[in-house]
Length: 387
Ligand code: GLY
Image (cartoon, rainbow, N blue to C red; front, side):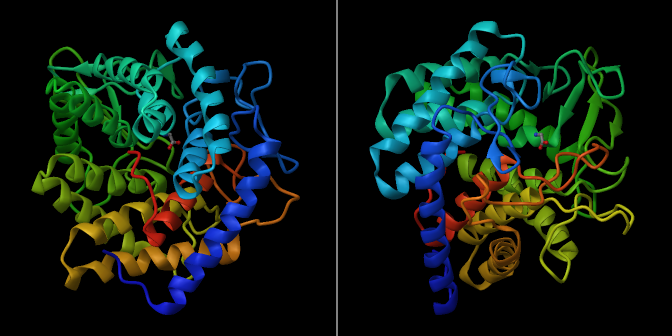
């Protein structure tokens, strides 16, 4: 149970009103798309390679978030139209299951907010079938000797073979395995998820509570080979979205398993994150990057806020504010300075960044909107924990 002051309750109510108004408008405008970003204020459409702004098409890893926004709003409003549009993404994603090759560990990001949300909210058996199919793909990526879930396929960025690579982001994909075990009463999915989470706890999280983005393990004999800076500034730096994935991911593993070490680790990452939040509450791409150039990543703020709110719900009342207050600070900063409520722009949250060394920074990204909405709904007490 979260305790908000009267002013914050009013702010949550007003912000939810703005979210509902914007979503009721944009859901119709983008009803046949799966958006990732906006181009001149208009949602991109990633549903086919031809249209896609990323060149990836339907298997682009963020293609579950639009469906997730719609299912959250369905849960909030009960309006059937949200479900109708959300199911369009779910059907488009079937082509990825059929093609298979474009898929990697992000099947959790793709099918939890779409098919599994549909099944859990409406009982649609097609959602269950799709979700279990995706869970089997994720479980199939487990390396039993290295005790990790393989992240990507082929080569990545620096041209290296990535058979032994695991990444911090995967903590958000393994709730698909927790769900599959509950659904099938087969413990294997959860066993894989927990072995992976234990490996991450042991090898990714540094003594100060910060997290590496990528770790390479020996895929044949097991054991750590090396770490990589990944989407952050450099090796040893602190990519903020990765810190957010770690923070939210560990509290989710705690929620699903009750394993105390996951809560302790989520708190440790949270303490590091909280200590680094700038005065203005707006989060840079990397906590350990040079002061200039300064690029923000609003997605990191929204994701970390979601994780902090969940921690606040799972600790004693005397501790809760320590996690809730920084979440409120970041969400106030986003809602007051980074949200576009106008009808000139299809997205809500601005100034998101995919990776420090990309050419493009500070643009709109769909999961910025998704996690901002989820965080506000958590504050309202109306969210659906689809992870
Ligand atoms: N999971 C990929 C990213 O956070 O950019």
